[in-house]
Image 1 (spheres, one colour):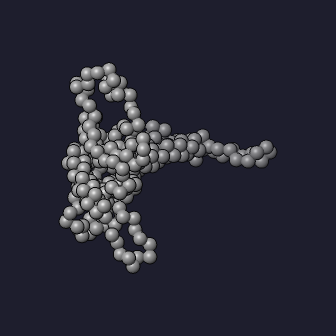
Image 2 (image 1 turned 120 degrees about the horizontal axis):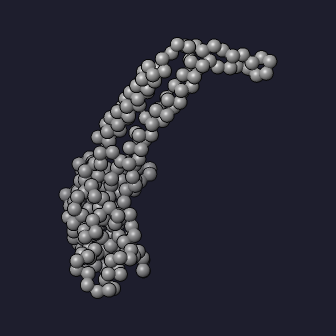
Image 3 (image 1 turned 60 degrees about the horizontal axis):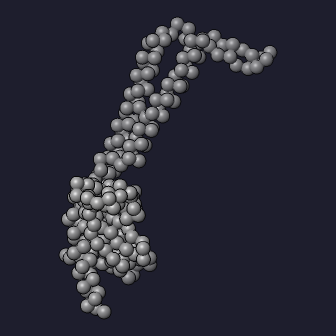
Length: 244
């Protein structure tokens, strides 16, 4: 894949994504689209953090200003110390806090709204999440801010579909212990994003080293994607064995 004239060749997963985005993907590729999340967690934290900072800083500065307006202030030290009269001795405290507090709250809300709209607009321009199943492997893309998973069949010693046991069908003590004790086969971050009874993939790269993977929940049920990957992998094995 890719143009040989490029001075620096793109990673194969990025080339695959570019072909899909440009609608130039080969016909034997299988492409699954997911739903965009409304707002990622890290973007929500930024949207909430700045308005909260405006509230805290605004009320603190308003409190200092209220003291200066109603009680005056002192400048200098020792003999040169000077006490300045209140700038606004007849200021109504209740009215002051109603007006100033209202302005600060409105500013914080406006900032939160503007940041949310800006984030949503940026997210609309981001590509949809994709799972691309190629004859040589698959690509799992979520967003520009998150790393893209890319698994090449050539790197795998084994690939198979797995399904967690239904608790109602567990009958032996050993099965109960396996269901209750998380093993290395169920330790990946992808497992935490899928229902306990759904299909997922498990592969072996080296002896006694196994990894598991399942598509993100934004793609819906994982069964169609996992089944497509397993079917293409079977074709890849048959082609490899025929070539050898």
